Image (cartoon, rainbow, N blue to C red; front, side):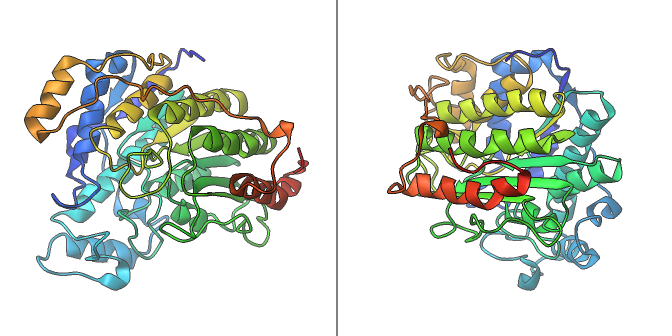
Length: 393
């Protein structure tokens, strides 16, 4: 689907200062490479670029304990100081200079994306550096200091939104966002992820479906390791579109961790860039169908920082901008030269992995012997009746 937008991307280069150090998997160079690739491909020409503001402590405190904000600030200004009870100074979340400032910048970028969409200045708005979905109210977790997505959704509710849907397609369960809105029926959280039996954070099963008074507001599809394009898209289309159509959100917020890719070093899924692109196209169409196009887009995980992240998110930006890229397109020579010069790495030459994503629709029936189908069926049985939907094919 093409759309006229307008679309904005909230970005300035200093967002790459969210940086856990040279040996950490979540290198900020992935954001830099994404924006450079999108620029070289002409993706950014039709997209309004907006500078990212810094969230205030008061804005962050709509979700996070003041004690966490104080601890993050101290950790970033006091050499050698850590607080593992707050998740600060762990292998996942090592402290770094001005940690609070960098983290508040990411939150501010998502808040600006939310403001762009809710005000009507933009139909779609993207914060590619956002999507830090593991952070909890009282502690950092899983490479995430502050939960920018949850702060953004909280702002939407404060501004008068009555129904917000959040779809998380990162390979890891979106546990922080789910926990923060567990008891809030105004927020539907849907997470498709590798099962917690195999992967951090070890949560997000079909029976986890929301708190008292908000039953059905949390939806989890716990996928088997090794799931590839066909199985992942089968799961997505079996669960996400029916629930979004039933919920009818005023705004769709999405998290696009691309660590579900077969080359990602931290998980065990087998998606291609082509399968991920198909998911982005589907979410764009759903935003137009269910929320009048109001779509707030964030990044997330993704640790194959040369081969996968820049291509996946350049596709995402192009789709949000209403001008999808052809998968067979060559990556620009200038971008490849930059990767080779700066990283000494061999960059991909095409925007595709050479796959044609296709899937078998759930309406054709399911196989109870297949782990994937059992996972989909469990989610549908748990949550569909709570939304007035028939869980059976």
